[in-house]
Amino acid sequence: MYELLKHYNYWLYALLLALGLYGMMSKRNLMKKLIAMSIFQWAIIYYFISIGAKRGGNIPIFPEHGIENLTIRAQNYVNPLPHVLMLTAIVVAVATTGIALALLIKIWQNWNTLEEDEILEKMRNE
Amino acid sequence: MNEQLPALVVIIPLLFSFLIYVMGFIERRMPYFLLLLSSALSTLFSWKLLIKVIKEGPLSYHIGGWEPPWGIEYRVDHLNGIVAFVVSLVAFLVILSFKERIEREVEPPRWSQLCALFSLQLCGLLGMTYTGDVFNLYVLLEIASFSAYSMVAIGKRGAEFSAFRYLIFGTIGACCYLLGVGHLYILTGSLNMADIVTLLKNLPDSSALRVGLCLLVIGIGIKMAFFPLHIWLPDAYSHAPSTVSAFLAPLSTKVAGYVLLRILFGIFNPSFPSEKVLLEALGWMSLAGAFFFSFMAIIQRELRRAFCYLLLSEISLLGMGVASGTLEGLRGAILHLINDIFMIGCLFTSLCAFIHQFEKEDLRYLEGLGILSPWVSLGFLMGGLSVIGIPPLCGFFSKWYLILGTIEGEKWHLLIGILVSSLINAILIFKVVEKIYLKHPHSVSLKNLPFAFLVSLLIFSVSLLVLGALASTIVKKVIDPWILTLGGF
Image (cartoon, rainbow over all chains, first blue to last red; front, side, top):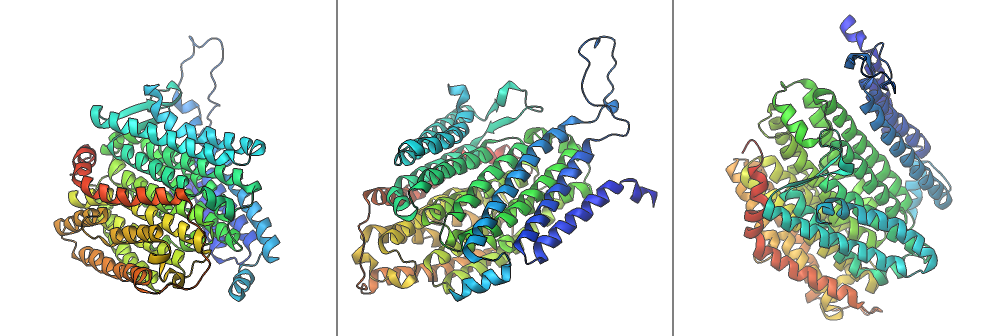
């Protein structure tokens, strides 16, 4: 049981991931789909951030002076690489949301609704 | 200059996309010519690079001077050398053809935006082929996808809805890929492909590794529109402006196909116990896909939708070559990837020219096209015959290798799949050819075919013959040296 609960953060992310996927597949409102998509993306970003974290880890910055006397142990510092990667992934996520919102505005202008069923109905009638 | 080639091929379209957008404010016709220039420069440099790789072997470029396992590496070998060259060449040919089409289809303020997006798309696709870093690949994949979503949304009424669906699916794909990269990173601690290969050798098979591989394949599978993951493609490509579908259809799914090859054979290899199962599953999925798409292609009434399904069934053939897991099958898959970029490029450029002349997409208007517009008919004829694999054209040779591969691997269901789907595709193509050459033309108003379309279609038609003649050379000089560097064969 302890083994399962030890990594409770990953369970939470898996739950978020499933929630996002469920929302994208089952919700008929496009705005809700977009929200679910953001949850999905953020679950992965949290997951990457957890990879780098360590219990009691310090920020990975060396002091400017006195490096000679310092013994550096990797386990004392968090791994910065996944965090740096996630900076890029956050930019990507923001850009995706931006494009999606722009598309939603255009959909609203053209069809006057954001419900998927109604749009499909209107498309069929044209 | 010569050492900087790998970066230049990718950076030029990126820088030009900004330049194109800014220049659009000054002179409206300028963006198109800048776009043409950027694709021509990329073609030239990627050709130089390909020649260099064939002569001297794979080369590695360190971005910003950082050493490979830490910094980003662009690694150009035989496979991505030729894929990048073919991608930029076909991009150039498509761009060459469609100046008049853009000007008629899209309103003037959008010209510069559309041209900038084309350039950005090219940058993403070329970057995906050259990069040797799995995370860099994710970023470039997203650059290519973003420009694709926006370009699709420029199309006719309803395009923005298809673009939104495309965006949702594309994001699921990219996120799955990213999650797979995360698994690989936890297991190996590296993002560099070459480094991962050496680290994976000492790693025991674990469920995390299997899940990581599956996530990578699912992510890329969505981007390349593999059988159950294809739902976004027909809508997005048939609502997009015709120029955009002519540009995206041959290139974006094929580059994703290249990434799949790189993951399955470059990073992992068929000797992994989990990959054997995965290849088996891929085989059955592409078999189902080949039947389903070929059938869907015949029953479409709109020409563009029919070609979209044709494109999907070609991708399923690529999947079958990969799934056979044999030397010949892999040869066939790579050759098919290269040929398919040209074949689909030829078909969609003809389609673009057809739409330009008739402003209609219904199959009925093809009747009598052979008399009304002989050059466009030639494009349809050559592209179509090549897709079904008539001997002197290039499609025959890749299908030949694919069939040899399935026989060598004793995958009889795949052999039947390739043959039957080719037969069903032949029905569609012969239906088109019959309408073009044997029916009397409708009395419709017909617009002139711009000279650029004629040049581009002629080059496409000739290149299908040339590629057929060069098939064995390509296999010997380019494909075999790459396969030799892989483990497991």
